[in-house]
Every structure is written in C-alpha cells, then in structure tokens.
Image (tube, rainbow, N blue to C red):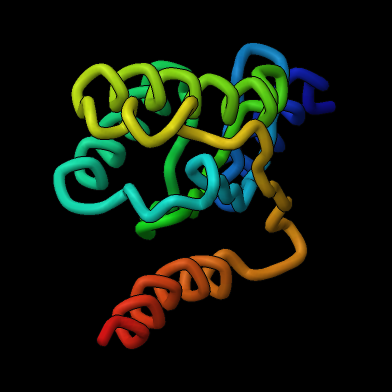
Length: 154
C-alpha cells in the first residue's frame, strides 16, 4: 500500500510541473487576470519616459507582491496587464497596490502629471479571469492593441 502522503505529493508535483500551477504554503492555484485601467479623464499622458517608467514600476511592484506579469502593454490612455496573482493576496489588493505605488512615484518624478490631473488613475478598473480563453489568445489581443493604436496615428 502506498502511503497517502506520497500520493498527495506526487499529485501536487504533477499538477505543479505539468499543468503550470503555482503554490504557496497552503494553496495550489492558477489565477490569471486581464486587467485594464486608465488615467483620470482618459488623458493620453502615458507616453515616452512616463510609459517606460510605468513599466518599470509595475514590474517592481509585482515582484514585491509575488505576482507574475505574463503580458503588459502601456497605451497612451490605458494600461493592459495580464497577471497571475496568489488568490490569498487577491486581485483587488494587487491592482490597488500597483495603481497606488505607480501613481505616487510617477507624480513625484513627472511634475507634468500633477498640473493637469487631480489624481493619476481613475478609481475604477476592468478585470476578467482568463481561465476560459487560451492565454495565447489574450496575449495576442493585448499585443494587437499596440499595433492598432499605431495604425490610428496620422
């Protein structure tokens, strides 16, 4: 008879390795979300150095909260993020943390963001789980946003 602990460990390892699940001390999970948020008044301020710095700050904050960025695109008037978050931390807490840190740092570093906007981000955001759609389809959609935005420019 095989001990129950051995079966549980083998099952855990199979899911973790074969199915690309993640785990913390007591949860095995795969929680991927497509998140979109905008600057206040949908102003097109996420360009140039601001865009590049925003990407750095999002990566840094995600690393601090142990969230994995699968895909990220910064458009002039919104941000797309495909992210995997520990369910015990929660997507709401992750988004609030990312938006809060990036707003604080960007407004501190780029004074032009304080003159035209009372706050950098709107209070709202869009979030959708991506369990039903293949990740490749979501990644393609996010990448296509950049291409379609480039075609719009005169």
